[in-house]
Amino acid sequence: MIEIMIVDDNPIVRMALRGYLASAEDVTVVGEAPDGRSAVTMAQRIRPEVILLDHRMPIADGLSVVGQLAEHSRILVLTSDDTDDLIAGMLRGGARGYLVHGEFDPAELLRAVRALAAGQGWLSPRSASVTIAALREQAAREQQDADRTENARAQRAGFGLTRREQEVMALLSAGHSNAAIARQLLLTEKTVKNHLANIFAKLQATNRTEAVVRWTGRH
Amino acid sequence: MSDISGEPSNGDGNDKELVTALIVHPCSAERADLGAVLESGERIQVVGLTGDGNEAVHLAHRLRPAVILLDDGVTAPGKPNLVRALAQWSPVIALTAATECRAITALLCAPVRGCLVYGHFETSDLIGAVRAVAAGLGWLSPVAAAAASWRLRTR
Image 1 (cartoon, rainbow over the protein chains, first blue to last red):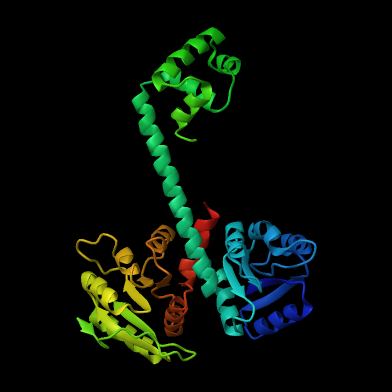
Image 2: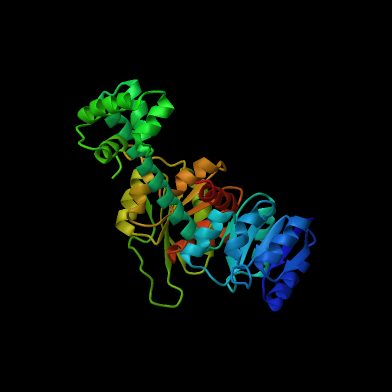
C-alpha cells in the first residue's frame, strides 16, 4: 500500500485529490496539511511514502520545505505555478515529480504516484522541457569549470614553481598573510618573502593579486 | 529510403495542426510498428522512415519534420553525434533501452527534447511525447524523469 500525504492550503483541492486517489486499491491517504510548516511536522511523524506538495501556501510555501520533506519521502509537486525557476528549484530541492493543476486527470495522477513509489519520476511536458534545459545548462557549466581547471593546471606546470613555492602559492591564493603562511609551513616570514620574490619572478607578477590571478587562472 | 509524403507538411492552420514525424530505427519491423502507432493518433503523419543515420540527417534536412523519433542504436558513420546532426533540423525524441542514470542524462544533453525508455511507456505516451515535443515542450519516461531529477539534485 502506497501511503500518501496531501499538502495544500485549499480544502477543496485536498478533497478533490483524496477523491481521485480513493478509486485505487494500492493507495491510501494517511495525512493532510494546509501549510509547509505543519507538513514538515506531520511528515516527520508519519513518514509517508509519497507527498503531494503544493507551492503557494501560508506560513511556509512548498519550495521552502521541499528539501526537508524529501529527506524521508518522495515529493510530487502539484501546483498551479509552472515558472522555470519554480520547476528547477523544486527538482534541485529534491522533488521527483511535477504536475500542474488542470493539466492532468485522475489516471495520470495515479500513474505518477505509482512511478514515484517505484523510485521513478514523473514530469509534465513543460516541467520535462525545463528539466532538460536545466540539465544541459548544468552540464555546460560543469564542462566549463573542468576546462578552466585543466587550463589552470597546464598553465601552472609551465611556471616551473618548486614544491615549496607551490605550497606558498596555494596559501596565498586562499588569502593568507605572509605571517599566516610562515606559521602554517613552519618557516620564518623572511623565508616566505624570499619564496614570494622567486614566485613573482616566475609568474611575471608584480604583486600578490597578480600572482594569484596568474596561478588560479581566475579573474 | 522511404519518404512517404515527399513534401514537408506545415499544418493547415486548424486548431490541431498536423504533426509530421520522421522515424529512425535500425529494425524495419519496429519502424513499421512505431509508424502504425503514431498514425493511429489524430493528425499525426509519418513523413519518413529509415534505419540509416546518414539518410536520417538527409531526410531531416529535406522534410523538416515536426519531430524526429530516434532509436539510440542507430549510428551514422562520420557523424559521432548523430543527435546533434539531426537536432539542427528538428527536435529529437530518443528511444532507448538505457535505464542507468548517467547514460540517460548523457543522452538528454546530446541534445534531445524527449526520452522514451523501452518497457516504460505505452502507445498513448508515444503519441503524447510526439505532440508535446512538436508543441515545443518536453517528454520524459518515468525512468528518464528520475535520472534527470537525480542529476539536478546531485550537482
